[in-house]
Structure formats: C-alpha cells, structure tokens
Image (cartoon, rainbow, N blue to C red):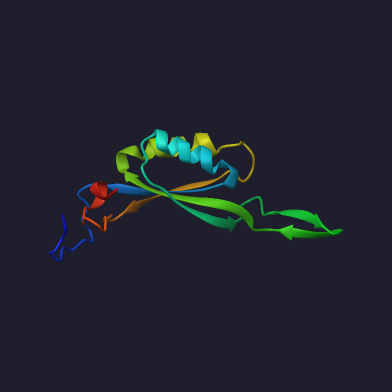
Length: 128
C-alpha cells in the first residue's frame, strides 16, 4: 500500500512509541541482542562508540611509557518500541548487560513523536 497523499506526519501520536538507547560494553552485545529478541524486539540499531563517564578512562603502559586512555570502546543500541513494552526492554538490557563493575553503561528513554515506515507509509506502532 503506497501513500500518495501528503499527510502531515508531525504530531500524529495515535500510538505512543519510545526510543530506548543503551550504551553498553562491547562484549555484552550478543547477550543483550538475544535478551531483546526474547522479549519480542524485532529490530535494533547498533553503533560503535567511544566515551567515558565517572570511570574517566584508565592508564595503559606502552613501550615503557604510561598514557591515558580516556575514551573507552562502547556500543550504542537504539530500539524503538511501543510504550507498553518499554519496561520489559529495559529489564532485558539491564539483566544481560550488567557485570556489576564500573562502566556497565547507561540506558536513556525518549518519546518518539512520529515513526514512519518508508516503504508502506505506516506510522507509529504499525511502523515498528
């Protein structure tokens, strides 16, 4: 079904959707991906990232010289889900990504004003 009319997409909030962003340790990616699949998440976006928080990096020794590595490798996951599944998604990420050590990461949840599937023109919950 192809959309031919010029619908105003902005502000069409018939179905509430949220974006869950998680910044995790790279070696936890497979576990988190599997946990998200188990709670019904059908798609994720993964981006390699570098950053630091309270841990402020660490020092390493290279050829006898000490230097500071302040941007640590991380992975950023982005998932857009219906609002009613956000709690299950967060719980799945926390359970799969948590090591109990500093640098486990962060999760951010944001409202999505509108989501549109380009191929069909479906919007919001239907688009994800």
